[in-house]
Image (cartoon, rainbow, N blue to C red; front, top):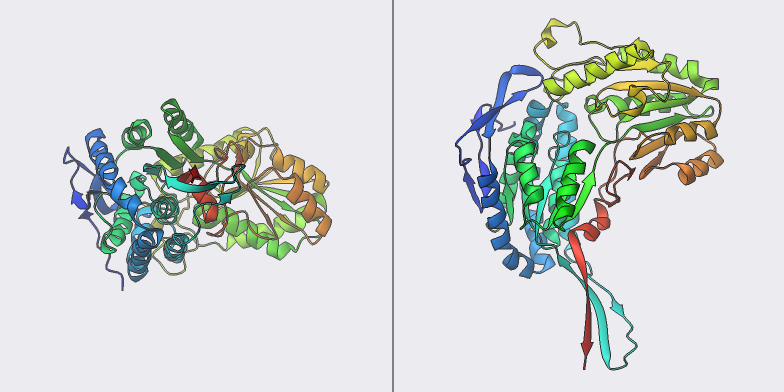
Length: 488
């Protein structure tokens, strides 16, 4: 049974202590499934709080980097064990605060456990290479050194997995961290930090500051003592974060939007393709950067696919993520609901044809939540807003084509390049898709959403700053190479 309790007050975690914001102000975190339920009260921090956290991280940096990788890894193992013990509690906090169903939240929490254990093991890997020197009396080799203080700016859609997949590699490679979570999911972030506290992490190594992105996020990006910034969020904010870091010579990593296509070939297993399209596009209410948005279908199977898709969508059950049987929860906030509804209206205004959904549900039991029906359009042209802009909601745009070549060209007709998938049995089509698709993640006969934790993740074009997260690729961002030349 979960130990989670509603309406608790949470504080920032700075220098190994839970402390109130300097202003003593808090904000309520609301349940998007029921706007009348206060999940908890979180700090409304200011720049003074952020400065305190950065100073703590800077002070802790020297002793933390002096530990061996194995010693740092042991702390991550202990944090993983604590998170696993408290998985139900953390998952319930996530569901109540962000809206995704409890099974999805539990799965994400356990993914966080796996990420921590993976990076704990990374502490035992090599940190460099021996390079032959032209001087016979010299030894030359490389090693990797931490950046120093790393700022982590995390979004609300994966409030456990994303902060952990940024924080864990930062820590294992010897950096100290200041985490700024999305204010909408600050309760969940505090629960995760409690697990690091249980692990006995030294004071100042990991700090949590909650507050508005326009205040804390901006100050973190601009802070002269923050040596690296890793950010996941919108393109608009990401560009500002990157510009602020670049202006002062700090390293930055941006993971931003997507407008992810799935291609349904004429020879596809349509049942599998429908299942993947619905899972990829509608789970977590479409609030994934890798969520399926554009569904590009060969005309030969367009009608058959559409019929199967609409039939399956009719059976989707909306509801509170804590209720058994709920398949899709609410949008994460009223602002996000308004954004989704505005894009649905844009689709109608620009001439797309609504096939399903398009409104808030008429069930009175859902009236106090930020719910929207799963929505499907056809008659979508590539110039339309719903075909070009990230919606971050459960909206699918069906687009027929006459060939795989046309499908790939249409899939690439986007400013984004995060993920893409194809359903086909033809090896030639698979290889062409792999070669020609401009996306950082391509998947065959699988949904667009999701990536395994040991694999590099990141996008092309406007979807990222062209660096990669997760797996062993994370070492490239969180460390710098130092070349050593030793003369006898």
